[in-house]
Every structure is written in structure tokens, then in C-alpha cells.
Image (cartoon, one colour):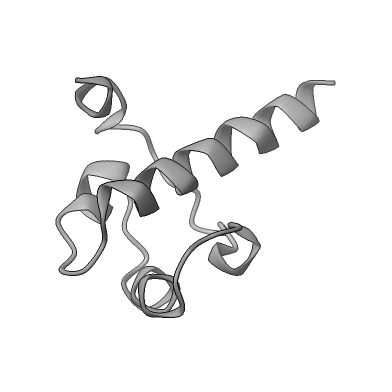
Amino acid sequence: MAFRRDENRALPASLNYSAVIGLSNEVRQKLERIRPATLGQAARIEGVTAAALTLVLAHLKAARKRQSA
């Protein structure tokens, strides 16, 4: 499972969840309030779906790609 590989991926404390396209307002609010340190911690928040985690991960990868370009 691909998620297992990324479970320990750190989430920046400054991550702007409002910039993650496709997140529901409920998930966005939970992530903003709880501020999980890793993708695995985010996965254990009630209501945060696998699809939401995929969106956050894709956002992080795209941001990293933009920074390195």
C-alpha cells in the first residue's frame, strides 16, 4: 500500500490546508485545528478520508516540485 510508504511523511507546521484543492470544509477545519505532524497522524483523525490524505500528499509533492524548479 502506497500510504504505508508515506505514513511518516512530515507535514509542515506552516501548511496552508486552505490551499489544498478538493478538501472538504470539515476536513480542512479539522486539519487546521489539530495540525498533525505526519500524514499518519492525519489519517487517524476522525473524518479524514484516504482521498483527503491523497490530496494533501499531492499538494505537498507539487509544492516541492515548484520549489525545486
